[in-house]
Length: 288
Image (tube, rainbow, N blue to C red; front, side, top):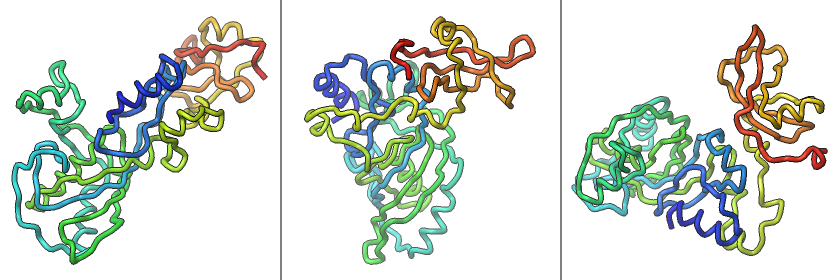
């Protein structure tokens, strides 16, 4: 099932046209796929993009997709590494690193998705990009199974774990692919709090939903005065209290703890203002 398939099925279950996911999950992977409903889809770009994964790394093989589902391009002898060898090696992959997206991916090059080129048997030049590996730890290692390693990875958005596995294999010279992959966290959403589509089909109760305000907790906030509510609804800039703001900084605009809009800090007439960019639908009579 692709991420698009999940969204399509959720639309049918919930009878809601405005649904979008927050970060593609490969069809062969499992785990967290956050889905936004209704007007919350307008806030997707502001959701934290960092991710956490558990992955199986398999040495000795290179495939055209960098994972176990791809066509085997080459097989090589597997070196014997101690746990200490692995610990030292993985240090090289922590922090900011350059990564070239795999051909079988949704990255656009020349107006086409890379997987579209791959289906035609065409390999195109892909620009590298800097991603960040915040943590990469060994979960499971056995000396008697030298070709397999289970890893936990915390990384920035846009990271391809199968490419990380591939690059580790290139560093060792024996090649490597990703076996299975589980996304355990996506931004503020955790696997332990997730629901299957079957559970959603049984009924979408309030406790299964996370409010937009909770999702955007990483953004600074400002409190809107009640008399300023009409001007906010019209999209007019609101005065910001003195603080060290940054031009273009995103800000939650709340009234008594309820998210009404998100805006950006602007410097105007020697003062800081918050210019609303996304005003949610609400009525003053329904506010607390």
